[in-house]
Every structure is written in C-alpha cells, then in structure tokens.
Image (tube, rainbow, N blue to C red; front, side, top):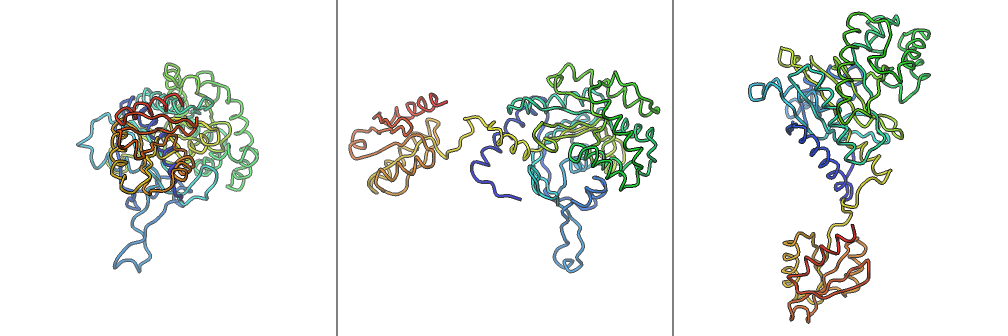
Length: 432
C-alpha cells in the first residue's frame, strides 16, 4: 500500500479520465460499492488461492476478543456487483451496463506492478448471453488502451468450458481440474517447465501435462474456426460460442488485437464461459482480464442472471506508461501555470486580486505568500516547474499593469492586468 504524491495523482486521474470517457461512450453507467463486504459474500468466490488473499476484518466492540472476522475488504469489484444486482434488481434495467473504478485489496506478495491496495477499472454487462457482449467489452478496453497510447497489446481469448473439455480429453480426472487450472494460469509467469513441475506436485502425471502443453502450443496461431481437436459435447458448444465471439470481434476496433490462447485459464473460479486477458510484451502478468460469469449473481439472487465483464489494472497500466514515457505533456507536472510575486506585505491584496483575475482566465495560479527578494521567489517558481511569474512592483500597481516573466525563455513583458491572462495562455499554447 502506497502514498501517492502530486505527480502520481495527476497521472492516475489522467488514466482514469481516459478509461471513464471510453466506457461512457459505450453506454456503461457508473456504480460504486463500499470498501468492506460481509466475509461470507466474498469467501468461496475466488478459488483456492483467492480465499487466502482476502483481507479479513475482525469483529469489533464487545466481540473483539473473539478473534473472529465478519467483514472483509473487497477482493475485486465483480462479486460486489453481483450482490448489488441481487439487492437492487427492481431498480435496475434488465440489460444493465456498468463501469466501476475503485480500489480493491489483496493480501498478496508485492512485486513490479502488483500491490496490496490497487485500483481496478471494471466494465460489465448483465442480462444477455449474446456474444455481442464479449465483442463489445473487448472493443471498449481496446479503445481505452489505444487512447492511452498502447500499440503493442494483445487480447488473449479462450473459453472455460473448452479448457475443461481439453483437460478431460487429456486424461485429467475432474477432481483435479481446479488444481490443474491454477497451475495452467501461471504459464506466462513460470513457463512450461514450471507448469509441469507444479502440476506434478498437484498429482498430475508428467506425461499428461506434457501432452496438454503440446496441444496448447499447437493452437497458438489458430482461430476458433480452424481448430480441429477431439471434444465432448460441452467442448464443441464452447468452441462454437468462441467462433461466434471471434467473428463479431473482427468487426470491432479490437480485431487486430485478438489471439486465441487455449492455455488461458484465469484463476477466478466464478468464470463459466469465454475468458479474456490483455498482455504487453514487457510485463510479466496482464494489464487486465475478464470473462463470462453467468452463475455468480444467482448465488445471491437464486436465479440465473447472464453476466460478463472486463477489468483493467490501473496500477500496471501506470507502471508501463511511466517506464515507457507515455504520459502526454498535457498531464501537468507542475502545481501552477503562473505564480504572482510581490515585494511588500502591503501589496498582498493586489497580488490576490490579480491571482483571481488570472484564474478567471482559466489559469492555475499560486500566490507567493511572503515578501521575499524577487530572485528568491523566481528561484522557487523555477524549482517547481512553474513557467511564468507575474511581478507586481509599485510601478505596476500604480499603472494597473503586471510584468510577466517567462522563465524558460528568460524574457519579460509588461501587460495591462486585464490582458495578462490571455498572454500567458498564448505562451502556454506555444510550449505545447
């Protein structure tokens, strides 16, 4: 868990603004949920490893001594969404599209781009089983990343039921499917040899895991429609669904980003259909992922509600953008566009009046609060990256003017105070 200094916050707000804008263009509506959920709401929804990463909250007050937990910090935004749908079903439309950008917490081991408190940028569509849903979700996240400046990401696509059918056909008994999925989900992190070793430690024969990994390798450059593998009936239905999704995606902005990956597992146990994950070449792990989870809302509501969603990991996006220098100049790294400077304490009212005028022109303004020497004031502005200093001496105050010093060009010009704002804005525009 981290502190965020001003530059960090500005970058986060920029990314969130872009993502939010794209989601709203696709018709998704905002939703927020509390940081804490009932422990029973979260437990059992994330699989074997997920349960161990939930931050539990001990009972409070007279029950504190029991050492028991009844609440937990939310692990993701999807399970809280399912609870909201069940609780507020009568107030929500049958076809409901929502986005949610809030922090989640996991008792994980910190690493590059992985933290115990982090933001997720979720987008979900509920009420329809149509493959149009998956196609539109992938298009939305593709547009968001493209607008942020990413050009080398891949959206990997698979189907949970297809993977189950492949596991069955490979000779892995059903009781071991869950443990096999946990190992397969780490393929991009620990490689084929690491997966083989983990599967063997989980009771799966080395020969079986080797055949499975060979099948995955053969399907790397295939499309769903070109696959020719022996499948049971549920597997064939899953492949048909994948083919329909793929065909629709070819009509969206995500078309060139798609890649079939039969090894993609997604660790969360609530997925029931198509699953997706976004990767970039220089990041171990993903920038985001999601999938269809038609049974999750039913756990709270008692009836099936089709649902599919995608989550972008804000922290990992920020890490990659920072390392690649992707933030535009419009993401300000300075607290102000201009600083007002005065020589005498009695002139402070004039400085505040000028600052208000400049803010009215659309500028960010700092008023230097102390009557220091002008050189010291200019040095402060330069150190903070403030490009202009507005100097108010006795002559300027008497004439209703202000001297604007351009710190980058080391020039200064005197303007009527009413015209100074427009002059500074013009100077900022030329700086790009």
